[in-house]
Amino acid sequence: MIEVLYFAWVRERIGLPREKVETAAPTVAALVEELRAREERYALAFADLTALRVALDQELAAFNAPLAGVREVAFFPPMTGG
Image 1: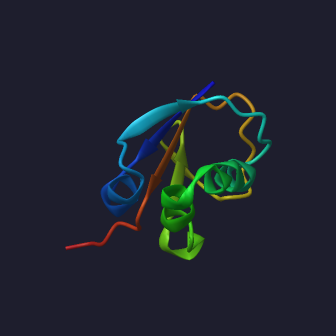
Image 2: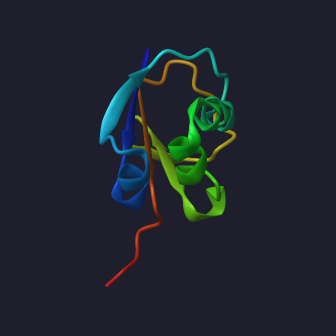
């Protein structure tokens, strides 16, 4: 079981700030595919992965990163400086 967190417009499109997901996905990309297949709102939120960043257990990661041992996955748009 992995805790999945959604931030900013990702949260707005999906309609949830977080959820627990039962998955056997080996990588973040595979998890995204599982989420996309759920329903339209997930497909819209994950339509363009170049507009998203991901963190595993609060560490920035790549979409090809393995999920083994990960407790938390967070999806968010890139941060902008100011």
